[in-house]
Length: 313
Image 1 (cartoon, one colour):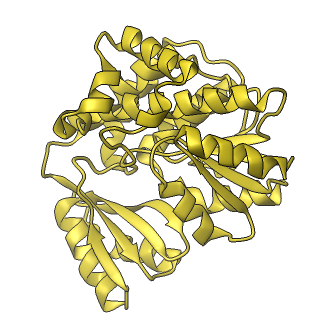
Image 2 (cartoon, one colour; image 1 turned 90 degrees about the vertical axis):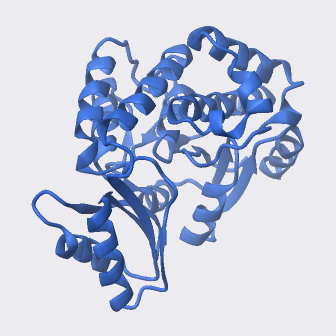
C-alpha cells in the first residue's frame, strides 16, 4: 500500500445533499447523530434538505463540513482495517477535521469549537467591510509586494491562501482589496476574481476572532496527535498539543500555505493524497501543485470502493 496522507476540505465545499449516498452507511449516520447531540439541532436534516441559505450560514457551514468530513473518514478507516494514513492536513477549516482524524481533538468538542469559530469570524468584521479576491497568474512574491503597496495604515490587504502556483487569494479591507486588484491587473495578472464571502479570512482583521478562539481552546483538552498534522501556518508537521493550539490561533490571522504543505508532505515520503469530505476542491489544487502525487477524492460510498482498490494496487 502506498504511503498516503488524508487531506480535508475547508469552507466553500458544502452543498445541500452532500454525502447523501453515504448516509446508509451506519458509521456515517452515527457521526451525524453525534454532531446533532453536540450542537442541539438536526444538522443532518440541514445538510440533506437545506435550505441552502441555512447551510451557508458560517456557524452552520463549519460544523457541517467538519461532520461530513469525519463521517467519510471514519467509513474509510473502517474499510482500511489495520491500514492508516502516514499524515493528515486540512485547508483552513479542514485543519480541524485533520486534528480529529489524528486524535488530537475530540469530535464533539471540534463540532462546537468550529461553530464558535464561525460565529467569532462573522462578528470580527461587519458585513461589507472586508473582502477576498483570487489572483491568478502571478508569482507569490509579486502578490505579497502588491498587497503591501495597496495597504494603508487602517486599510490593509494581505496574501491569505497560497493555493497553487499562480493562484493566491488575498484578504482584507474592501477598498484595499480593490486597489490591490488594480495593481495586479497592471502587473499582468491573468484574472482577479472577487470571492463571494462574508468575512476576510486569514488576515489580521480576524484578531478578535483569534482571541475568542484562544480563550475557547484554553478550556479544552487537546491530545498530542497520533500522526503528523501538517499545519497551515507553518507548512510543517506538528504533533505536540501546545504547538497545535498555537497553530490554530495563528491560522485565523495568518496565511494558509497549502502549496508548501503539499510539497513538504511529498518530500517527507508521501506518495498519494486522498481528499476526504465534500467536494473536490483540494483534489484539483493538489494536481496543479504536483502531478506526480497520486490524487483521489472520497465523498461517497462509490468513491470509497475506488480508493480502496487504488490503494491496494
